[in-house]
Amino acid sequence: MGRQEFIEVEKNVKLHVTDLGEGSPVVLIHGWPLSDAMYEYQYQELVEKGFRVIGITLRGFGKSDKPYGKYNYDVYADDIKIVLDKLNIQKATIGGFSMGGAISIHYVAKYNAAHVAKLALFGAAAPVWTKRTDYPYGFTKETVNELIALSKTNRPQLLENFGKIFAASETALSPGIGNWLSGINMEASPYAATQSLIALRDTDLRPELSKISIPTVIFHGVKDKICEFALAEQMHKGIKNSTIVPFENSGHGLFVEEREKFNNELIKFIKE
Image (tube, rainbow, N blue to C red):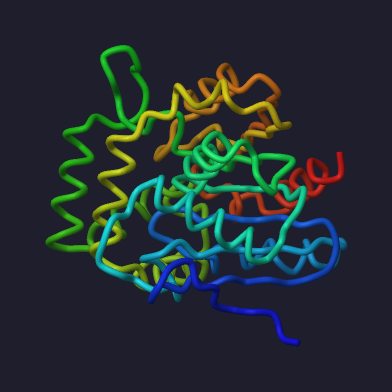
C-alpha cells in the first residue's frame, strides 16, 4: 500500500503531504508563502536518523488545493487536525516555521496538543507579528498593509523584497537556494497569500501561550529581520516548558542558513 500523497480535509479540498520514513513521527508545517517542499534538506536526514516525517502543505499553497473561502489560523489548525486524525499519528513532534510556527502554537492550544507530545518553533511569527500598543515588536500594521497591497499588484516584487531580508545578509544564501525558494513561493494561490498576510497582521496568540504545557523548543535566528529575535523571547516568557536555541549566524532562513545545526538540534530535541 502506497502512502497517500493527498489527504482530503473537506469535500473538494485535498492537502499535499510528504510522508517518509519509519519511526517516531515528526510533523512539519511550512511558512508563508512556501509549501512542504521547504523542508527538502530536513526530510532525508530525519528519515536516515530513524524518524517518520510528515510535511503538510496548508490549503492555498504548493500542491495543495486552493479553494475560495477562509484562510486563517483556525482553518489551518483544523486541517492539520484532520490530517493527523486520518494518519492516526500519536506522540508526534510538531514543528512550524514562521507563520507555520504561529499555526502550530494555535493548533496545540486549540486542540490541547492532540496527536503531539512536543512543539518546535522555527523563526515563528508569534505571539504577534505586528506592533500593538502594549507590544513594541514586529512590523507596524501600516507596513503589513503595504505588503498586502503589493501582494495584489506585484507579487514577484513582494517576494523579491522578502528575499532580500530573508537571510542574515543578501549574499548569505547561494543564488541556487534563493531561486529554489522563490519557485516554491510562486506556487501559492495569490488569494491565499493575501489572506494569510491579513491573518499574520491581525492574530494575537498571547492568550494561547499559557495553554501550552508540552516541551517546547524555540529556534530563532539572532539576525532575523522578518521575525525579530525579541519574538523568541516573548514566546519563551509565555510558554512555561520552553527553551530558546539561538542561531547566531542566521536571519529568518535558519533551516538553510545553518542547516547542520538546525537538523542536529531538531533531532536532539525529538530524542530528549
